[in-house]
Amino acid sequence: MNDNHYCIIMAGGIGSRFWPLSKEDRPKQFLDILGTGRSFIRSTYDRFSRLVPDRNFLVVTNAAYKQLVLEQLPMLEPDQVLCEPMRRNTAPCIAYASYRIRSRCSDALIAVTPADHLVTDVPAFERTVAEGFKFLESKPQALLTIGIKPSRPETGYGYIELCGEPRLEQVQPMAAFKEKPDLATAKQFLAAGRYMWNSGIFLWTLDGILSAYAAYLPQMAALFEQGAALYGTEGEQAFINERFAQCENISIDYGIMERATERYTIPADFGWSDIGTWGSLYEHSAHDPEANALQGRVLAVDCHRTVVNIEPGTTAVVQGLDDCIVAYRDGSLLVCRLADEQQIKHWVERMP
Figure 1 (tube, rainbow, N blue to C red):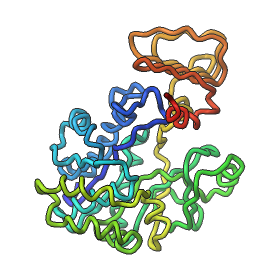
Figure 2: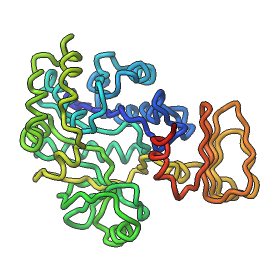
Figure 3: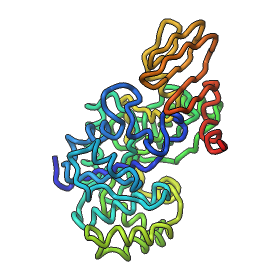
């Protein structure tokens, strides 16, 4: 384990596609949705913990979740939890953490990861990240993303196009990012064999990413540069609270990765899922003989391929449903077709 290895965990989202399990007061990243005994954010920390010293983790989140982070990651100090005053997408989030890292370590190698993904093959994950760090030592201006070998024509993920056939756990040049496709296009991507799912996990050097901000998001870089003397001091939070709203609301993919020239991908296959939808939860859950995924005290009668997830202390009888979702948490009930799960976020926004 190297002292210059850092990990930025992005943990500010509210996971509205996973309503009603994930709500604003306790979002998805702090839940043990799969019943493993560990929340998503704790599992994220665990799989990086053999590669990154405890002191070199930074969690970027909303101030309302700081105590939740410290409860679930007790090995971190309070100053390792960076509080965004508002949501501004991933580019400002990563910039903030990167400038904080610069105040401590000028030659840092950085991994950036969402807090709420699933990885089932941790040794393969560790090998992939270690290979990326090794590559950056010889090519410090490179920007890497981890691409996941697709197992189906998924329409809920973005894709990465490689310049050639994928070679697992080996760094390769990237040709292009592709937005979430329709089903016909996703099938074409799968058949072509050179497209990877975009995991949203990145690797780069501190100098490489700060140079990219200066080149592609210069106004954002200049804004964070104004606080150079304040990072790691008592004045940091006041500066961030005042200036963060001035940042463009833009993702790291749009803001930097789609514009960068030295961009690479590490194709990998380590049992990854963002568990961002009820459909992905269904795939990773145990099934009864009728292919239902049931969690809680549930009796399913004449149901097939249906997800039922209810909170402890409640009971449910569900009859005659095929390919549906039934979920209950904290007085909120969801019943809908599994095929319509992408609409859940919009339905929640429309609630009175």
